[in-house]
Length: 154
Image (cartoon, rainbow, N blue to C red; front, side):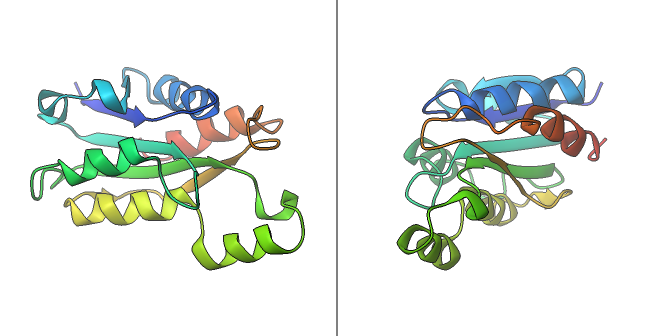
């Protein structure tokens, strides 16, 4: 059986919902909050998704700490994908916020780079799932989009 894991952090519950939808889409995947992940969870891993809300144009500190504490090349031969939740650029207030998003981007890109640095193979282009406002809820249709996006890796 293919070992599949979805790791996430969540602030307002939106990223958690996306993570669980990805887990369902993968079939028999384990879905864990980043603070609950052990090194043993990474043993014999074949597919890994990691997601975070975008906070200050980057992943949460818990996700960054996960990567900081990851042994060198711990994810070699793992097919991986990164995702985040975010205020979509086109929905952001014109002006300063849009400029900052264009300059600094979203969490998914930073997670993807960390996955590659850990030796993972990025099997999917990273994805962002839109929220309405700072706290959400998710934009209409985003859970369905997450499901179809995740299934591409199979």
